[in-house]
Image 1 (tube, one colour):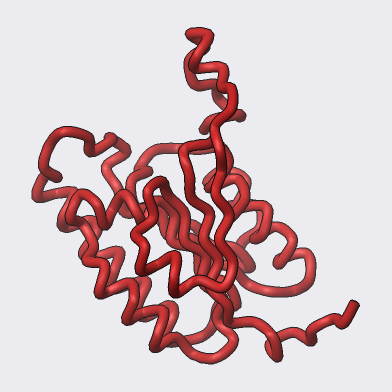
Image 2 (spheres, rainbow, N blue to C red):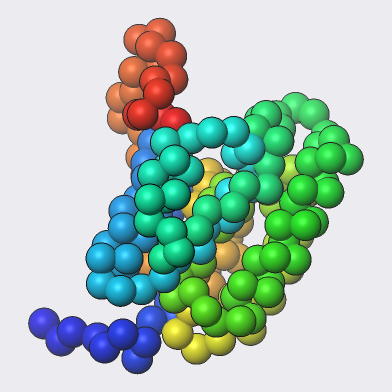
Amino acid sequence: MAVANRHLDLGLVQVYTGNGKGKTTAALGQALRAIGRGLTVYMAQFIKGQETGELLAVERLAPDFTIRQFGSGKFIVQREPSQDERDLARTGWLEIVKVVDDGQHDIVILDEISHAIRVGLIELEQVLQLIAQRPRGVEIILTGRSMPRELLEAADLVTDMVAIKHPYDQGIQVRKGIEF
């Protein structure tokens, strides 16, 4: 197996999508592996806006790993985003573009980007442009259900998380440290 040097082979696009649990967890696992090898990671979370286990853990990994939340913490389902949610997303997108353009982070994760696109917080074309214009050596990871076909086509790696069985089906609610 050939082993890549630090920046020589970085710069691919990874997608974690599907109806199964584990999309954000897979991206966080990739981030943890990268930090262990001396890389730096920036994660933008579009829907989350509350304290989560990953947010607390990443505080211990700073400055190598940064998580920024640009969501209200409320799911946007069967409703229009509020003006505050639109403003958070706009502010977040401007920061993300700057982070990617600066090239100071080896990996940039856009968590729940497909949902942000679906509800109109971020335009698909913006994400495609970010991918196309990223500096060489910046790896992009996209997560979320129902990833747009155009992003699947732009990706180098696509993993579809398939739901087979979930504790929700048994009436078990979200658990601190497991789901958030």
